[in-house]
Image (tube, rainbow, N blue to C red; front, side, top):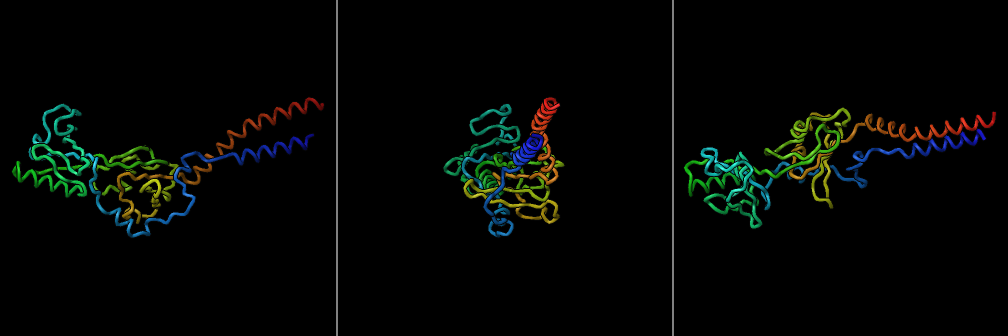
Length: 262
């Protein structure tokens, strides 16, 4: 009987060990099929370095730095006006399906396909020709964002507030890596759901700060994996949680068996 109990105990431990699993976020972005690293693809690197081109439904923030009231009126913050939404720093205007944006006084200006700087110059030139003397126009695309997940101190969505925002910029804005982070396994996922492209960045290598692939694009997902020590710690904790009931049951059975066979 005693040998049978020991046998059950060993089988129970084996079952507990095989039942242990990593936390869900450790397997969120694992790829079963091999994906070639885009750092070796010149076309991807070139696309990463290129500036973003304005699309329909983008939100543009426009203001005249010389005379802000030409673009922003005295309406209260966060209220809708006839020509856009007052954000306190400049009115915002949505790019329409036909590729144009409707701006005060000058009307519709075609901006789809242009970079931010190109659209800014076009709007500035248009205001100069029809209304303003030497305007200084500031134009921003305010709906661009990236998502950062994993071992970062502040997960979430972050707007791309400047041209050519880098991975280092984003990590700094999110408060830095946690102690559990694997700095040698940072993934940037971009592209469609059916055809994602994954770039692995090794932040332990100083050259990664100059890698053109670390320049972020709107819609990118940045995932920072756990380091091996943190993963082992979680597995050990999971094992301890699962093993405690089995050990308690074994001790109870052992006590009962001992009392019966006295």
